[in-house]
Image 1 (tube, one colour):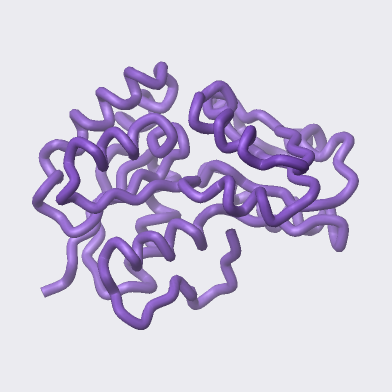
Image 2 (cartoon, helix red, strand yellow):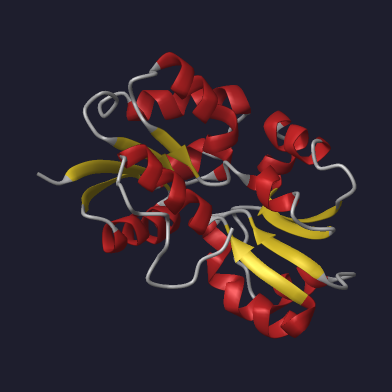
Length: 215
């Protein structure tokens, strides 16, 4: 019997992450959330936490792993959920951001406006001593295009670019083309996939995908 994985996020994030997991692992993926998740991620941290728990309650204790697709949910809710439901495996997009940042000297992060204000995000930044970190903020109501990319890259010289929201993974190739050799552009899907493998206890799977994902 296939292991069961629930992914929770808005439509774009659910499709990117849900398809990545289902295409690379012997699991059955259930996507929940979509429009409801979109409403949740615009709330305060406490509201995101409460509503995320409420939406996931029907699945807690009944599936092998629950994946939070949005960084807002990961930063505000994942530790709370792990502490409250220790028998349930939870994985979240952006969970290992500080580990990725610490490997670099100069980092620019493309992230939602709400994430930049979150206490967990600020704590991870403060732990990265000696790293020059700048941000480009994204409002989830905004439709990204060429002008958005230009604005995000303004003042950028070289270093690591982190796409810290699945909603903007569509810009990855565009950013690589614009920055050429000056930047390494990554999203957090590789890290999420490795954590999902670990949560599902798949032996011999180290998080390698059929495509080259970093982060």
